[in-house]
Image 1 (cartoon, each protein chain N blue to C red):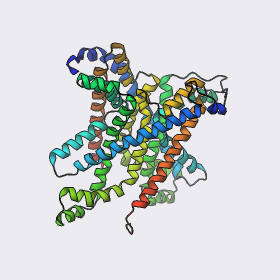
Image 2: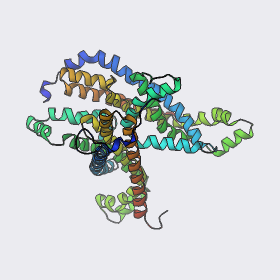
Image 3: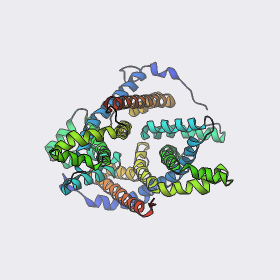
Image 4: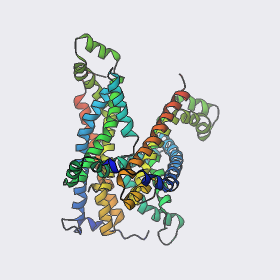
Length: 230
Length: 240
């Protein structure tokens, strides 16, 4: 029952929860969002290009990632990244890869599929005449992407990209399956050590709720502010 | 790559003594599908109810609907899973908590309820969007014909809204299906958990995960085809 709810369990764990746990979660979220958006933009450009094969490869990648549960993808890369590292560096044994690197690679590659769908919608929503006008002005494909199309796409899509980043923030809690000390991992370790599951999990829920609720309010506010009236 | 491939592993007996590794993965697939379907029943009905509440002219109904959606959308699924599984039995009156803890298949029931309530918040958003996308005249026409509010929803608004939101509902169903894998953390023996167990028993990591990947892709394809079939079946003739 809640009558023996013990706040001191939470207060004494605060430094560990936030300085170790939340710092890991936020770093992972920020880096994976950045990497995911960059890679996602490239995948979206590949998917919309008129080259042979490339759009199919991009489409296959996105559809594959989107049909797999994140937990399975986390396991996949946890075992695959050492071999990939070996292949890239040409070492003679699988590379030992830390938990952080492994989860960063996983989340970047996984979220890139979702970010690429957002960027694709964004690029497609720019009138075709703009790309035509840019090429009539003598801009190359990359120059027109860089200075004409993408700046508008980022502006239009910022709220959706940020919303997806909030989803990513929640998803990072799944690194729990690799026993990593992210925010939830830290809460869970204290919970098991002290036998205080009720306090720690409720506190984790409250913190996640507060962060995500405030962030999504901010996104909604931003959306109103930057919306271009057409 | 110095990795010993062994694709024959699927036909070897698993150390659990109940069949081959292939049987083990297939039983995981079955749990995944059953959990997803049961959770979807809760998600669909509860989500529709909450979604409708958010479109009603009543302030309290709106507030409850909004609070529900915000609460379930802003807490990670894994945390919700822990709350249902570890916290709920402790905060309930002792006799109820004890009853929950003694349930056989507790991870299964917990996963179904947790996923159902979680997915309901997503379904609610789609239902609300569907209803709000209908021309305002439809509701007014329903009222003008003397239908009560519930009759207007039952016979006019919902049948149209559901048809319109079938594609996003399909992707919510697929999310729900993939989310069952989160329940491995509370001990549900679904497909990802079984692939992981196979990897631990046999050390054939990539065979186990490849098989799980193929099975997930296959169910996705089945779901997408089924939903396309439903969409054609329920389409209003001559509409669009």
